[in-house]
Length: 85
Image (spheres, rainbow, N blue to C red):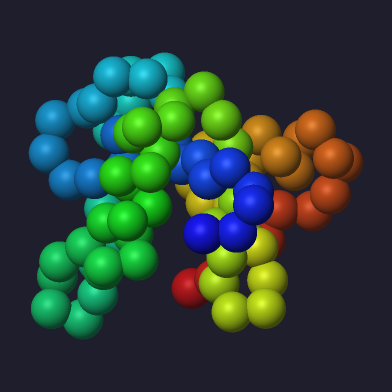
């Protein structure tokens, strides 16, 4: 990891709602065979360990935020929130 402290939203997995992030369950991120991708597994694990932080996740040359972290950051920074299909 880079020098940036990683953060990720808790509760982003299939199954019952997780604690934190408002206690809501988030949608599972699945690949073509219907399972959570390795990247999202890692993201969920890091976020569970740091539920009070925003997780800037490095994807190639860019840092991205996912789920509620992206919404919080977009509001705080006054930027447009985008998403992929």
